[in-house]
Length: 390
Image 1: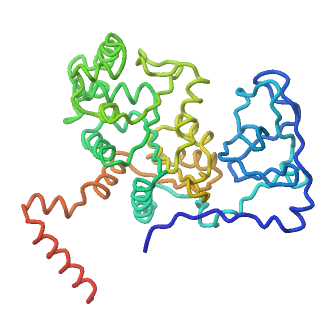
Image 2: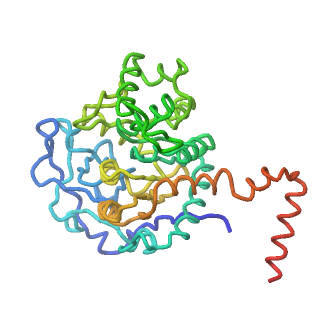
Image 3: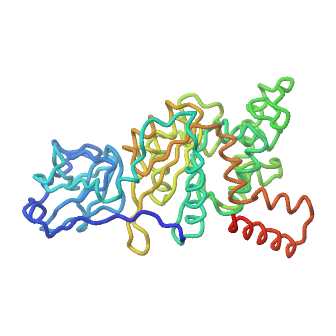
């Protein structure tokens, strides 16, 4: 059976309660970056706004933003981006009496994740669905898979290798992270260490605590990450792969970044804006081992996406962390809609994705045993026939 993403079912606006609802009230912005009194604060739930008797549906939504009426449409904006003269939707309740319909019922109940998943939970079904979904989005015309990585993901050789293979095979369309993740990934490709620890043997090297600072100096001397990579300094790593493939990555700065790398955006507002540009394209978001960036992405990313064919589908968000507290915080922020928590070792998760999507175990066996393709296909067909007879 072909993989199917749940589609949004629109409200029946012929019902009296919708026909009798008033239009939204609007207030004008009098100062840039300041919302008028009584502004409506948006949620992650799909929301309609009634204007001139018509129910309008914004292209994206986001948490704790404002709804702006412009050019006959509703646009969701950050308060800081408001400009003088813009018209903002007013309401303190967000109900039909205000001309606002928060429509949780548009997607099936199965889309909302159950709370209480723990490290003891089996995630086999979650993995299987994720693999199908990743393949679907990789092959879709407008699929866009965004990865959000913490630094621990790039400390391990197998994980680094798996990330590269996933990117090379079309499973990474954008990477979001911070200075530490990028610095230690480049350190691994430059000096074969991450925070001074050998990525192959996991042993601390002499004076290794200098390594990431030496790396930062070298990149800053080169002027950019791309220049440093182009000079042949980096052997491998996800940043090198993305740079070589011209796949975008956005690096958001923190208050105490070493260096930082030239591409790290220290201006918070600009970092949020650049991150939001990528998230607005997202159809699938995979957050791994970073509470800070996961929570910010959970706030900003839309819960749905209007596809090129006009269908409205959910933007799935996976949160992978070895700590239960992290994934549950992220889930609460997303109101558990199209959210999948996985409490597991993050290195194992990445390697499992690569093995399932790029290098299946039976294919590795075929290569290692040097079985010709025609004989391998015959063996597989025989195995499937035998399983069908049981």
